[in-house]
Length: 343
Image 1 (spheres, helix red, strand yellow):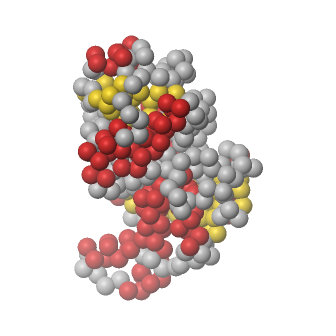
Image 2 (tube, one colour):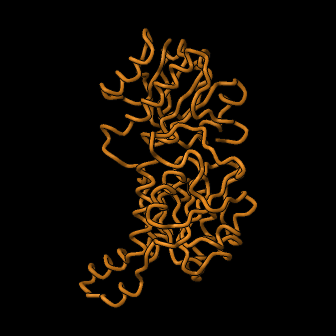
């Protein structure tokens, strides 16, 4: 079996894949970066002609004609919207899986950090430090505890569940929103001992149509759903109008999940106390966006999953290796994407 990787893997990562199934041919095709992003390469190598599996980060422009024998694409990311925009999955029936769960521990730590920097006044302290001002009373007056606060999680997948586990340890009450709130179990891949695979942490569950209710109850709102037609602009003017004035929003999903102009207006009008945006519309954010200069906005430049590059794909390769064994054996794969739902 010939497997193409658009990521230059470390020796450890290559061995993880090669040891999973004897006799595979793992090769690294020639690629271009037409999008300007190293995370979405365009494969141009004619050696793809007899390739059955493609793994890594993929911009699928022209990939169908280049790889007529392609049967399975595995992404090292959780987001799949860029691949679903092509005809590869829907029309050709190519299996698509992602690496949901492999970045969840790091993103969950990021979310907790964002909430802590807000509730302990770190942003106020930093601004005062830059001005050489001893703002004891201002910072002290803004501080509060996470204990007893409500965390509303929109998108209770691997990231939401990993965050819920940590938030619960801080004494927070977790509210969860997902497409089917009657199904609490998560069938996706996750690290042992991480997250909330059985869905036992949330005290309340909400349907997508009940998001205004969830927003109205939440002190902190985490956005972690996939980007699909159903989640585009999932939060907008009506939802922000229902929020508590002291509510704080964190987005680690995609910028388009929020109606960004409505968010800016909500913060200006005091309908939200602030936000931490790891993703924006567009990316990079326009230099004239008012978000840059809003004191109660923290921008983190799509880095919530960041960790040392040498180990960045270790878990993704472990997940892919397990799926590769299952693929060869004809067993059900982890993290199979439904092209109709978009996740």
